[in-house]
Image (cartoon, rainbow, N blue to C red; front, top):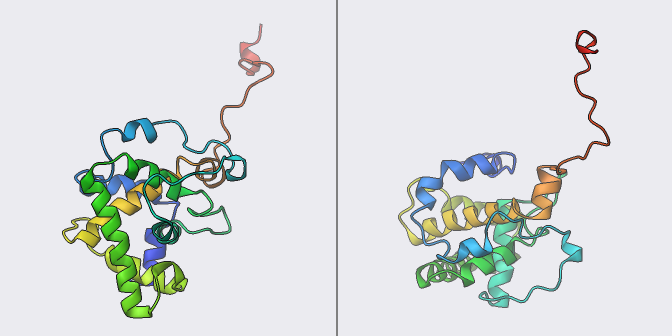
Length: 202
């Protein structure tokens, strides 16, 4: 799999289709707990712009894990000329909330997955994942994604969980909804003109 292919695979224009396509694999993973519906329900988790939101206090991840999580989510959904990426959308906060509410299996999946990612980055590049170059980050994520359709190794299962949560978090954020998908909401009409065909006028 080439870098360009990975970039296309993770293109946010296809992100929702990807999520549906991998649902069978992701559904069996301990991504979120039974109480997550209260957190990740149909309501946009960040309806207001990030600058207007109150300061978020982490519930589960430690500061060093948050830095890795921010970099990973941005690698999955990067900023481009169309809209900001997962970091600007504060996707890590969404993930922190759902993992904090999850069971032990999900918590272990995330903590061990982030540790694995940093371990490989340290081994190959002498620095944590968030300090690697963009190309290095893409290469590391690409490796974890190779068996995405049928993950068996812990790091592969972690990638599926991370991508699913990143997409969920991004597309329930103000940036994902309004800037990327360009949803403007329902537009109120000052008047309803009715049918405009001449033959139907009285």
